[in-house]
Image 1: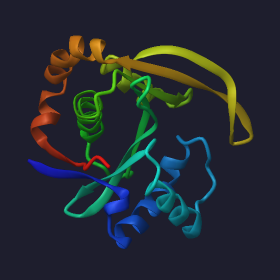
Image 2: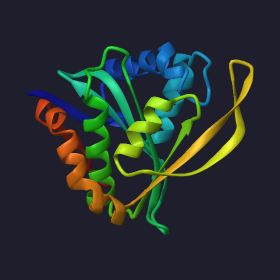
Image 3: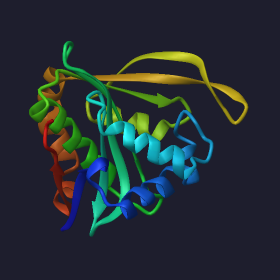
Length: 195
């Protein structure tokens, strides 16, 4: 079994924060994000510093043996309406099955630890692989915002997905069975101290 830790980026070492920048600038990551420019160090460090006092975002770094292999984030956390948006990206060399294990654990974290009732995400319409993964976890496609962003000088749409806590509780066992092999392969710990 391989051990992974999700640690808030604000609690990571400078070396780990730099590795997150390198990950954010990988071509396979940038092609699935809204912006695709190469992020500069000062821009990255400003973003990390802003997270320090931002109660509406939690950014976890995925660590294996203290090495960065991904990022999982919650944003637009809304304590009034008990909802949040989320997403993740992994190193191009991340192990097969890790994405499913991250998704499963993050969903449980949001509904069990944070006490939220709705989890939303947005997927660029060209990213069919991630759209399929979300659907396997019970996310429902709630809409398409046509020609919403510009990627590679072309307008493309963004698909909206949502998962309610009640739907998750209905699908959770089925998802566990579907990804049982991956769940046994990876052990995941989430380091989180509410502020």
